[in-house]
Image (tube, rainbow, N blue to C red; front, side):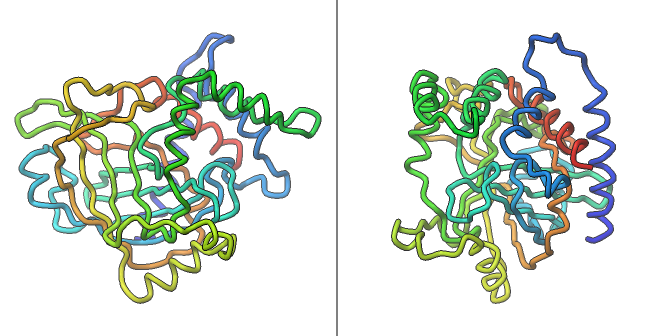
Length: 325
């Protein structure tokens, strides 16, 4: 596994350089450089120049993914045609948060096949995103940049209420609590990916990782009693007793579901495909915090989303990775 992780870092550097060199956008367009500039205005700390600028606080773990028999009968994904696949898992907080008593959670699962194929799944603990377009994505962070050392809270409220994507996301997050553990957090792809069926047809779906121990939130009073670093210590204690488990499902799009809008919450009943079980069984330190994880690292049989956010998200990861070297 250690050798695979080393290879992952080399791959990440090469990929980021390719992203940095690809494409020339018009000056007035929102591009990855502008988004990265905004992240640095908001979150940069000169004392830690090599730290991630987003999802900075996190820790690493090792596990195994066991594909279900169902998925190989339905989907043409060669990577999953194994009984067990090594997995690198990174848990993180959202944005630049450094206090575990915040709501935002992130999880990366990187499956590493024997033949060099990989699948990097970058997820959040929300089913939807806050921005539909690159312009909205930039606007969401620009409004939070302090002016003369102060954040204009009233301006943020006004912009949030007048921008449907921001308003809907804010309303969604009110129903999301502070999870008691990474083992009690559900994680979602946000984007809609396109999966190749065994018949060659493309299937639009989002995925989710549901914890086997259930989603559990603190009450307000319970959350206040926790340490700002409780997630890592709780993980170590828990995983020393037994592995942490998740079940991965594909949620198939219905005919009227938007597949190019990450802010759209699908509603009603959906067909699902059980993909497999993820078992996280050991803590692996902080080494992977320096890695970059590209959502467009996909195996054969999984094709990228068609929404306007996906590509610029990958490009921004490449830019910020290059800046912190």
